[in-house]
Length: 621
Image (tube, rainbow, N blue to C red; front, side, top):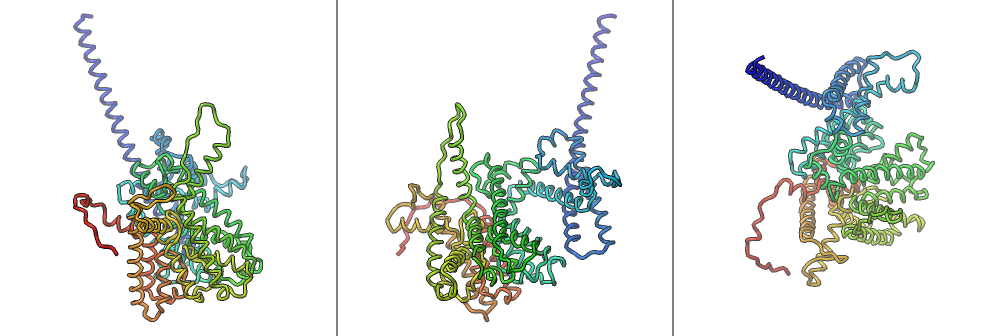
């Protein structure tokens, strides 16, 4: 063949190869684009189906339904189940590498579970199953409902984390999450199966706000009004409100749906007090694990302290132990026992339940930063005991930090002083007739509950005026920052006290334990105190105008209890009008999310021009 013809053939073959490659690349691009679009559409459909699933399950378990309604509900749930199965199988089939990279092992369990719900549709229930127990589980409605419910929660949490990634102000995100959860909780408590008799929406909103904001004020009698379903709703609201909606969402997003964005990680880092991005997952695990572990241990301890004279059944004992443990650690102050902690049988018992409850309250009020610091210290101490590997030098860590020292010393000092004061002042008043041991236990218990827990064992309406004033001061102070307690926080009180000492001694700055407090911390502490006073006065005037028939003492106690999320009352909560209840609900909301944080979030960050202005002294005398 002539050389020219060979060249022409090679040229044509090259063009054909290039054209084939171009078509293949174009086809591959279009195919991948189509796969991505279908995957995104399936993800959106799964999100909508998840929301629909949770709504239907709520209606199914919260309302009295007919067999016809249940059948229709099950058909719609089967449709949502099909969407979930398609979403899982499509990603496994066409986006396997990405799914393998982004999916955590817990998410694999949920995906496998949702795929297993397909078995009853493809394979009828056998007459002689190999594993009877497994067969009964797989073919039960409870398994299907729980599986698609869990998948829905995971899917929605993943979607929420993506929405949070739009760089919204963290304070607004936190406040908005609490507000949304309060509204959802108020609607859930209105369901017929949650209450023995219908309650007004105002009471439902008030109770939901009190639960989410872990306050403890009740406008209804919980033991006689709420059913086990209602108590379950309250439990979820309290637990979610205590740890924070973002913390729960972060847990599901990280451990089920892969790593969140950098912005999401920074947001979570600030909200759970993680010192670095590398410690984000361990810190989140520690907070959730510690909370569940303490509540479990507390439930077991409370179970064995329940007096037999109460006459509770085994189920009632388990429910009371679990709910009371959670309510104590979360500093919520709710009780499902008639008369609560003031129950006569408990008061005349061996006081062990008050000791356990006091320990639980203190554990929830000292703050996760202190607990994290203690955990780091423990890990470091264990590391020194264990054999060291050759060539590895132990990393030196500074213990304890200033925050831990200030919180510990301030908390113990306030608790000791207030317990002694309560013991002395109420010795012959509300504690009259008790043994010295019982008086000591009750003094400690009633000095801890005003810090935010809100339990009542002796009626505060009978306190001496000076005792009541001490209780109000304790309610104003509260617990530690980043804890489950309310108030302006002991960190703020310590900072203000050290700053005042520096002014008196003529020092340029506040210091403690060979450390100097930052100017930003001091300014923030003064801002918190100032706003707390302004807000308290505003709410006092408002409620006094709305309820002129109530005494100033009762209104003051109620407002401070709501604003600083304590939950104690002089017995006027149920007598308040609807408008007053809504006003106090807003007070509980502000107390939980933080007044200063909310105002800073709404105001935004503006340019600081103060450094360009000349300095001038103001006469302060």
